Image (cartoon, each protein chain N blue to C red):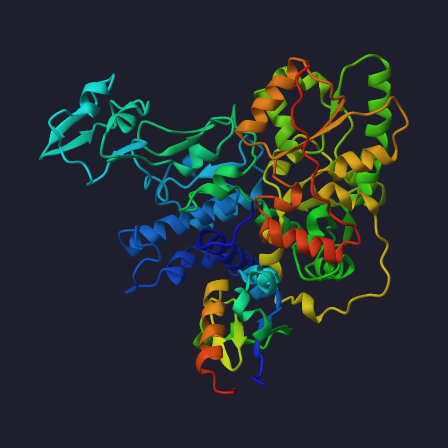
Length: 487
Length: 89
């Protein structure tokens, strides 16, 4: 899902600037980021932004999110970013919600999904007015007008217009959210319902204004790295091999250069996940349970906790590769700060629940940190032979199922792969809960194609897949998507 | 025989992270009529990113023309110009 567009690039630029200020010990200049990125006498980057003052305000709130705050938690508009930065350094923010809406950047979408275009002839019949069940349409200056406060979005007017003059305008974040967790509040600004949100990151990728951001923990990671005698260990998610033009050993060397004490591959923990999940699968199937699902995708697990609660008992109890890897790290570095680095937004929500993991960073933050520290992967020698862990397969759809099957010796399997938690697949999962099917093993990943397509990756899913196949020593197959068979 | 248009993509980490990764699939995305006229290679970071006078990353060179804020469309357009009115034919 990661895309390279201006919204993404601005986020990366801000992360880079933030890292640079911290590293150069100039955090007190943090309030200047907005001035430097939107200097006086320039036109705003986006034509939709009225002036540089608005652009600056938006940048300020983006920095606030990247300091780990929820933008809507602001109480004093005059509080400086420097003050937020000091607050961020003094404590961890454990409250709920990883995604936050930069309200200054939002509000640009339509007030109602149905809009009368200038093709409207203001016809005598006025089918639209007659059809509207809420009397939301009036004729003004010879054209129909929809009152957004009355419109309920049924779309009957659009179908009624003989001139096709009424169009449907989607609100990208709402359209992309598979669980209806993002909605317009009374002020017309999008708000996230954290009791519903599964942190899949779709809204963040979908918003053309970059108004949805993840709350970063990078400042805390940098702070721990800078503390004397503090060990900070990085754990790199299996999808890492598709992120840069570099082999795993090159990346690991670079990560150490950033100041991390040691680097572990999460694929190592995935070995334990695959093995234990295979044993668990055999056990539950022999006990007569109809099916089991994988548990490594945190957005899917949240889905079964918040929406599809009927599916929860079928989710494997085996810990995710991140948790197993953290256990391995703790054996060697019991007092270290443990940082998971991956393409995922939901992983931060998962990590907050387990004391073994201190922070979660994204791949794009890793890239931005390399830029801030002038580290160029191209200058690192490609080391000779590397040990390829087969469980790097966890990075793509089908791969987890494959890995589990490698350790499995129970009753014969009839597996299903669900690749991407969009609305249609969630409907499929809802039907699966009813039990009217033959599947006994179900792999679920929230992103289409798996973690290689994560929302906070560096490359597009297509590029990530290509690089992964060239560099990881493992081949990502195209997932075998079975059609739902009803019994 | 006409010379190939040489496309050099900066493989530096900065360019790659700031949008250069998109060029990984450029070979496949070239229009058919240009496919045999282009040689694509990577270059180590020449340092354009250190000075604002060159513009913003990612950087790509098409023959001797430097393209800042490069994207696939810009590069393909530039290749086409070189093919049609190039200096080194």
